[in-house]
Image (cartoon, rainbow, N blue to C red; front, side, top):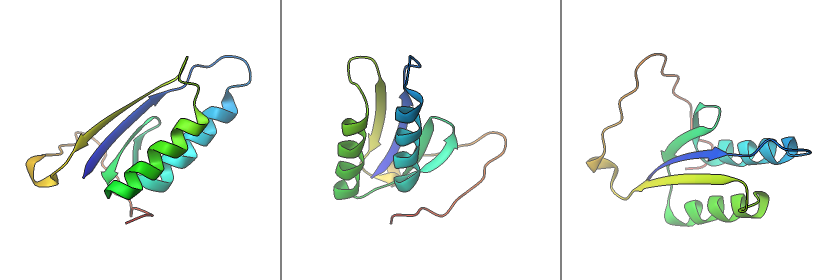
Length: 92
């Protein structure tokens, strides 16, 4: 499935570690397009791993993650305007 993920970690006292950890986990599973915007193809088990790891890091009372799942990548069209650096996905 094609996954688009974005997060917002509230910057309050001592939260920079959470921000770094969320970013690090996302980079292991998805391509980074902007600092808090990621996309890529994941199997269902890898998607579940990603979400479980993120939910252990964030505080659901103040942080947010939005995920858009497109089950069939053939039904999606991805268009980038501007610089488009493609990266090799670490997990396939």
